[in-house]
Image 1 (cartoon, rainbow, N blue to C red):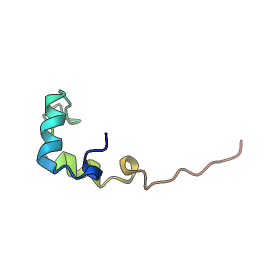
Image 2: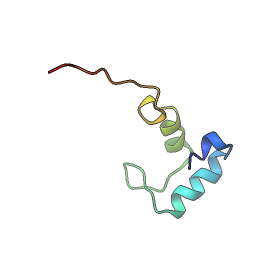
Image 3: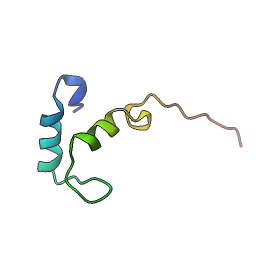
Image 4: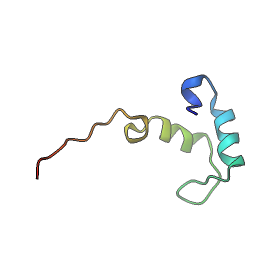
Length: 55
């Protein structure tokens, strides 16, 4: 379920990720900075498009 787009705040999402045992790249519990980086990364939000190249 897309929590952020359904109106859930940062703290609610962070609590959920940590309850699920999700960690950052560095192995730490999720925090506001890591969540903000994910929510603004085009790769994760679907804003980035991949070009299809013919073989």
